[in-house]
Length: 471
Image 1: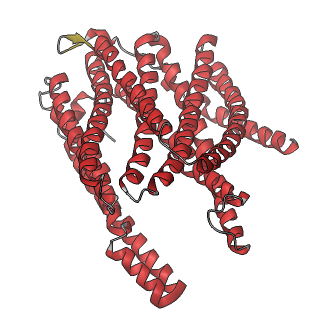
Image 2 (image 1 turned 90 degrees about the vertical axis):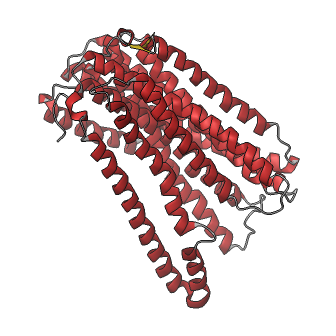
Image 3 (image 1 turned 45 degrees about the horizontal axis):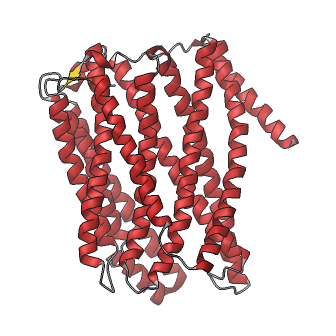
């Protein structure tokens, strides 16, 4: 406890110095005022009403995720497997409860900083400071709840996949984990969008800025703790227990060994809890950043509304694209693989990624043309859609590049295997480093090319909308 007190005192001292240094800073995202979204019509529907309709898509995402969850829960599983699954879940639950208490301690510290910065330095009204703190708690609850959901569904899906594998048919081993991933993803995005749309549509525009800032602070705090702590826990519980299993010659999956439970708990903490919370935070703060950029960079109120509505419709369209692609790919995969005894799991996954990308790109251009056909000089709708498309293509191309170096049938992977057989540990390490460097290089090349294309498109007239040219 004394160490914790000392740590908090040091942090508070650092914060005091930071506040003193930033005393001349006058601007803040919390000062943003959201324009009247109903002032502009899209397809004969005002922007506010259009986004209200869009909230039904968020509700669809909730239902989709919950239905997937119940389908997994109702799958058959051996009684002994279920007992071990629940034991791992209880251990993960203990970990998450402990992290939740730690997050609340940090939130108390962050609350002091918020009061000092916004209340004392920025001279905000008391109600605005309270709103920031309350919304930061909402952000924490969001990150924490989706992390808990991800942990719960993954512990269920793991053992149901293992039990399904006993049938000797690989399709369910592919389908169950994918179903769990889609459930987490759809629920995560839908919750995030629902909260942000609620702030845009139902909160007084004068207070929307503080709401967004508080929400971003909270979800960033929750995600960073769960991500960092999850990574540390993985290293300690996972790798530590693996080493002890080797030392004491214990079988890898002997559930009677506490180290195996610690191993599985570490996997869930590092590979499920952390990334789920991180995904929630990343999607949220990106949205806040886009809102901030549009309001600050574009002076014309009408253009602000057009771009804000367009951005959120694009996000809603992606939910539709993902669900439709998953459904189509599921029909194709089931027809091809439901009765086979061998399958390459990468094939249907790659098909899903590319199918989602193509549908997303098509819907992006279609929705942009319908919503903002006259924006700027009349060509900005396809330019903005093209910039988004570069990001969508990156999501499809980068996995293909990575697969070149990590696929089980990859020449690079086979080279590592042969190096291990012929040259021992040293050659294995060298082969791995070489493959890793090649992989990083080509990933960097792909990202640079797509970013260059996006920048080139953005230079074709988008600056005319901005208050100042790009730096």
